[in-house]
Image (cartoon, rainbow over all chains, first blue to last red; front, side, top):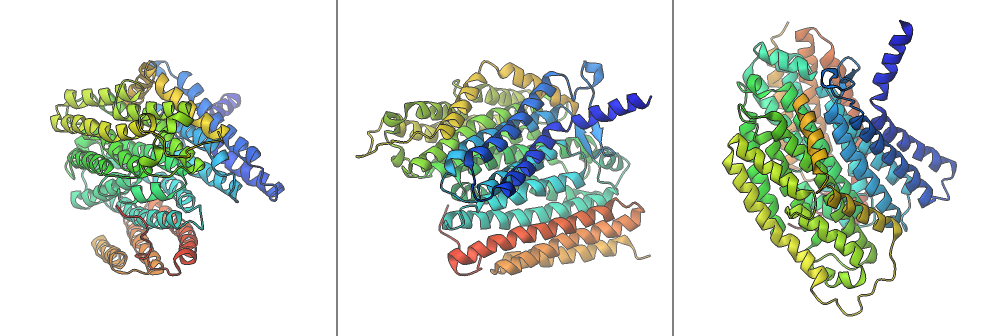
Length: 504
Length: 100
């Protein structure tokens, strides 16, 4: 009997292994740094960070294929809930932990070259891993308290990372703006939580839903839910809290832009999915506020703002920043199309699958910008002229990323946008589908500008690259290969996404 | 016992004062103080309704909020310090090298 109980505790603890791996490798980095602070061996530090995050990504994959987080009735090993239901490990949390861990792996590998001349490398990697610990914890949060704490654990290191280039005015300005809006929105989020607590007397998601079902003060609850929408909109860089994104992504070191725009956005969305489907299910919370309608408005506004602003940019990094806002709008369809009677697993699963594909293609695109910054070729579209004559492999990968982001069938982005479109069709939200099509067509215009500059335009005089950094190349090419492989392998992704979405 | 609605009004007032400070003041340090006010408005609600409902969830969460507020200020002061070194001022409207 005791043995059985022991086994059970062990198996439930091991469900958190990916999150623990990320956190422990952050601590291991601090240890390595304190043993030999003078040497600051970039390979060793990047190796520890890379191995830790890779191990976390592999563990989540093993868990997912091994049927963890799936109820036993469906042939899985059961959903694990820990600490009195405060943390839950189901397929959705594993799915999002996989996105975060694989993005971090790519970012860490790329950073080993990007940081070659910088001090404080150990702190950099530690902060990246701590932020990713917060993001993967956010994926498992089953209570507003854990959600707030892990949101802050994800945000606070990110503020420091954006301002990492201390003597670079752009980086400091970006860090300041990111911090100001971040602090404001976390205060709004906290106040929203306190109002929900005032109305329901509970913070745990299921308990909140039960309390709402029994009847509460809808006014207080409605304002609380709206404020929580604000916190989510900030984290996912959606309108109306997207103003920090272009500044922060442009000023930050490019690997950090990749990290924030992919992993951080995914973490924000998993928070939204969980809070709104578990704590405020639309059939009970609809009396206080119709959040599906709120998300429909947000999705359409975000898509148009992101894509139209991206089309007018002169700098590649800033264009990618606005395009990442546009993609937040696409993923919001996963919530906005949840009208009555629609198949939840299909709509939500489409949003989740798009986030995974987006994680690889967007990280890759920003890491290509990191490569360009490493070479010092400049930031505008014209500066990329003729890069393909010097670096055809990296430019081919960048072409895959950009066309996949636009939704052409050269990478997984084609199928993920297609499933999103199908979700809008099946739920009868024609307006969302139309906005998706219009904006995808528009996005092809500005993505093609980069491709044209790289492959067709003549290189500027004296454009010669003599240094091909191994780490950055590895990360860009690996992201390119995965993006391409997600085209034939999309069935696996959507399979896990839909099964995870049906559980929430 | 005082009706719980009074606490809601108090916390809403504190929250609005904080928001007003953020929107009107340009000094980054005053910005930090205003954010603290907003977070403490949340704490008032949490503690008041914790007593109202007779469970400790809200009180415990308000302790976490305080801890996180302190951590946030630590990061904020660090960023304001590098802001001062680069722009020789702590005015949040000075840092405008990027424009959309």
